[in-house]
Image (cartoon, rainbow, N blue to C red; front, side, top):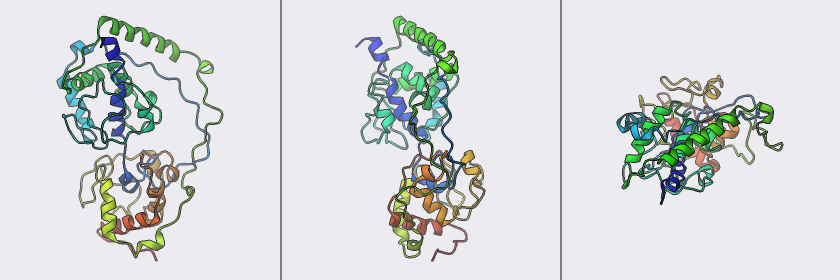
Length: 340
C-alpha cells in the first residue's frame, strides 16, 4: 500500500473516537440540562430559522510537521481525551471507542462501539490529514457528529497529538512522503481560496432545511411519567442510571466528569453546580430542576432544550423515566416530596 493510499486512510477513525468525546449519555439529560441535549431542562428561544452556515475555514496541514512532531507533548495534550477514550491495545470503549490502531482503520468500524451516522458515512480509513481536519474542528469536518469538543486551533498541537496517536498501533503508519506533503499543501491552498470567496458565492443551505424545535416544548408522543413516580421501583431506576455513569457521578461531593455530579439535582438551580462549565442553554433556564422538567428532558433532550450539548436520544418509556426519577429523588440531602 502506497503512502498516498495510507494518507487516504487515517482520518475516518479519529472522528469516531474524538466525536465520542463530546458525546454524552442519558446522564447528561439528568445532570445539568444544558445545551443541545447534554445539559438541559428547558430551553432557548426556539422557532427561528437556522442561520446560514458559515464558510468553512481552511485547516493548515500537518503532514510536513509530523517528522519533527513530539509524541510526548502529544500525549500530554491527549490526556483531555482519556475521559472518553482509551489508547491501549484491547482497551475498552468508553464514551468514545478505543483509539489503538485508529490511523488506517476504517471509520466507524471499531468492534462494539455504536457510531453515529456521521462517522459511518465517512466510508474510508482515517489518514493523517483527515484526522488533522477532524480534530481542528469536528463539527465542520463531520456535520452531525456527536463530538462536542471545539477543536485544537494550533497546527503544532494537532501534529503532536497525531504523532502520539501514530505510536498507538501494532505497526505505526509510514510518515507522509514528499508527494503526500505536497498534495496536502496544494489542497490547503484550494481550501483557502474557497474560504475567501464572498458569502454570496458560498453554498447556500437547503431551502427545505427544518427549523430547530422550540425550547421547552413537548416532543411528539410524549407521555408524562409523574403519576407513576411514587409507585416506581428505585432499584430499577438505579439499574437504568448505570448508563449515566460514564458522564456523571451521583455521590455527595462526587467529582464532575463530562457532566456535573447529580447528587441533589432535583431542586437544584439549573446550571448552578459548582465547578462545572455549563452551556448558555442551561444557564438561561433560570429555575430549579423538578420532576416535571426532568421528565420532559430525559424523554427528548434535543426537543426540550434546543442547543444543549446532550446527545442522548432519550428514554421513551414513561415507566423507565419514572423509575429513574424515583431513584434520583433519593440521591438528595433532603429528598423532595414525591408527585401525587
